[in-house]
Length: 448
Length: 159
Image (cartoon, rainbow over all chains, first blue to last red; front, side):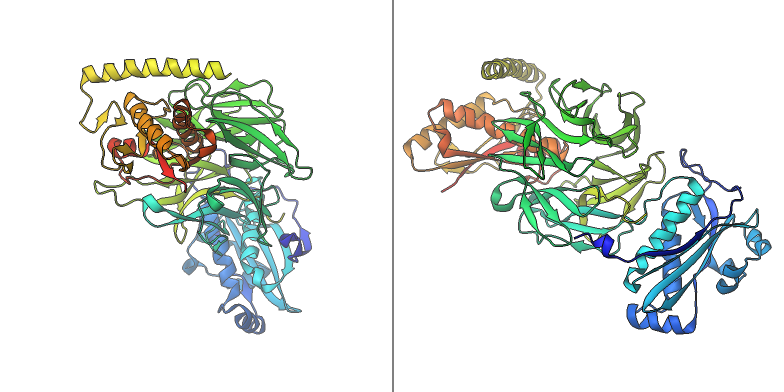
């Protein structure tokens, strides 16, 4: 069952002024001057306010939704939401017709206004994006959904604004699946967990009875493939997030690990280890046909498809040390692409197709970096004691990964946390989770 | 394939010997490590009197050291005497590597131990292999000595 199809989003009208935008945000460079934007609280009438308070236990759902938008825009590093105390115009009037001089006075370049109402038991939201300098409306959109979806409404507005101002799709209406960790380093308890991109709605998907590692979404983000040590047999599993149904992938006489979906979601690609040798295999989820993709006495692991499904990048120590290779999806034309100093691991193909993100170990430090698919243009984004496993935002502009701390002389002080960083190397920030966390995987955009 | 692997292993053993002598002359040995292979007994448990349960590895390596081979010969002798005992070889890596590669490395290390036990007459039917990668360190320290204790293959009684 597709839970996101069940969610009822009705887009009522969309009209876009054809004035060319004076404001635009360049996301290809580190943005040191984020765009000043005023997010006026969504206005709400008294009747609707009371109804939503009853259903959602939130005093003012209009303000709550606009706080989500504000937080998302700020987190992106591209926007600077201005302090509401400085706003001169009331939300309801601003939504009808902003007094641009007032917004100009507080140096806002873009303004977001809107209103929420309770219509037929549903949450109806309309919002507008205004170009303050040009004094024009840039976008107006309204939609209706079930009230419990109010957080997603905030994320969808954020995505629309991001897209209108940067020219690229956003990544706010998304989720992160990851491994929640607790307990001492020598006996870590690990559970699968899922949360919204901004850390809310955290939910544990397994109980922690067995070790679980490396969850990854399928393309529509309904299924997850991961490694579980159920009954002490490390195998790749498939989990349906909504129903909770789990199954082993294939019938391999040994450890299977490092799973990912193919871009069409029909296959799982993974490593199978036998007799000290790990090779890469695929299994078709419909007809269960297994194909052996690599055949080499070295370790071949961490496979990741190109978005068009034609190529696979992977990690191999066939040269003597861990390096990154690419090959055709049938295993032919294997080529090493990492030639810098150090060891390279965890290659992941960008959703835009042009870059491969990786983990690098050099002189006792771990780096998250990117390189072109032919291995040129290597760029290291961040350096730390330990960090690995980058996963791309669906628009290919942000990477999420995990970082572990060094313990002290007594072996204490260990922690594992999720972090994100822009492709530009700027805007590094912790993604807050209720427990320690590792192995993040970013979903696709849940709505469009 | 098989022959190649043996050749490769032999070559690695020779190289490792060179590395070890090189290290010995540089006096890197700290009393608990030779090169970066753990030689102490802090974490070692015993399957029976005089039969240590684990062997240790150099960084990124799955080559058995002289001491490891001696330990495994003792284990093989004990297993021959106790023919009803089955074992699990649990392969581990230190924390200084990516998770997925370390899973493969742990598997390779445990299999190096398995291959050696088999050459001393222990049937593969009695041995299963389980890699934990870097998931189950014995020492939670972030220093070379702790890492050396964690790069190991542990022989565990399965029944």
